[in-house]
Length: 411
Image (cartoon, rainbow, N blue to C red):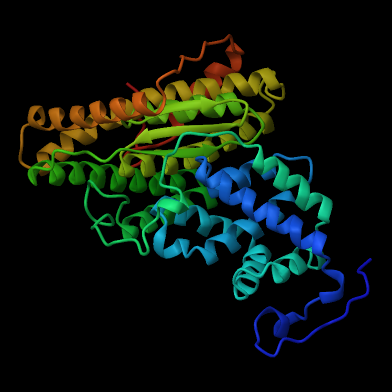
């Protein structure tokens, strides 16, 4: 039941004019709780955490509305710090996705940030707008964020951002921060179509076009970087957040995709977060391939269930299925990478032997940065899986088309 509300109109506009402010119901204790939450978020950023990280942890909490609460505070903080103009591109992309998934939180953040540092509008929105949050919930989340330990800094925190992000050519240059936005949007569109269609052949065509476009763009960028005589290869880290079920098997798939694309992966099991390290272009490719192939693997596994394959409804079968799918996909991607490299060298009118050292240099730069970020890692131990699931997954991986023309890579 919604409590009785006293509306106080603001002559200056903003939040008060649009929806009313519940001034007599926003207690000093509630404002203090919100302030603690905002400060805890800022502190977590300085210790290496990023927007998508804190949202992932909020989704994993026992309180279903923690994600909306976290999104409201994250997006408001982004407005006040002008993150869109100052933050690294990957940070801005995280905020965009959060805003898309939490539209009510984005709307509240816009209104609340209009009052600047005044936390009354944000507190009122959190307490009295759907979904409603209690002061206790705000306090609990603030405590959880304040206890987050130091983590690897993958990008400069807000305190190190420039007054305005300087144009450094990163949208177009191979040693910069991001791929061409037009290329990425085209790839996302192709993969979205592949995931939306119920027709396997049509999905294969869309996936093949996306793979070809990204691979050729990445190799062309590496060639341009080499021809310009740039000695420094930009290598970044990116976190990927995984959800149940079958998290370990999903990590296996992510690692297999990364290994085929000169990207290394480290897994933090207690957080269900993986960190990938590679060039910005390769990271984009791995991220998008992983998302698309995970959809294909899930669809194939559901197909096995629907057709009543022996044992297909068991957890062990599904784990084996995803492990087999990942193993075979890794092999196919390595084959595809070799063929794409030969094709790219032919397009550039150069011997493939002259291109291989350039790609090897990228791998060396990735290895060096990986060792710097994570000097103490250990390889995960393999484990036994359901044999029927394993071979069914490998068969499904053979059906996942990765090359132009929709042809399988089986030999």
